[in-house]
Length: 192
Image (cartoon, rainbow, N blue to C red; front, side):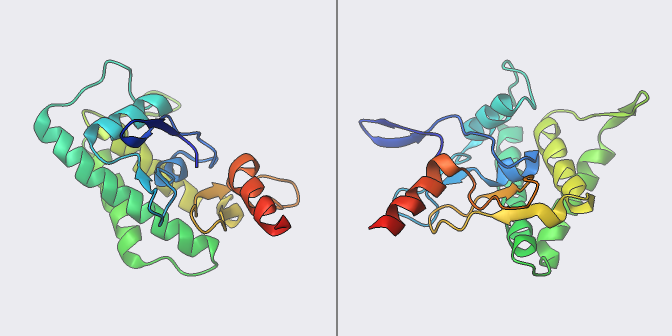
């Protein structure tokens, strides 16, 4: 799957392709080879979350956090990722999302907004500290849930993937997270 490179000790996370069409969905898609012996959690620690946030442009390359805030970032980041994935999977399947997942997204969006400043016109939300990562992600999830693209939300059917994405094709025919990975693997398997 995307974003892996090998070293002598096995696969390690590398930069992930952002293919979902939404920042919150890209964040949810930070587990590769889901459910297999090769599963890789790209957010396994604060360094992984910080690297992803820098790659996504949420924070600058010099951004860092003190130890106490790093632990909170990991806890909140994993909770938010799980909530986005569970809510997105339910919506993609045509089901009602669980209240618990919606509550996590709501609570993190509300908490980060309370500590942020609102400036300018058009308005700009300025988050501080670890909220520079969690805030934009929680609000991207809220925007997705309130937006007109929610009906285009899909989940990759590949058994070891299940990444979420927005299908922006005119006829809503996109099936795979990426044709170059999951789509080609499925085609190869069907030819056997």
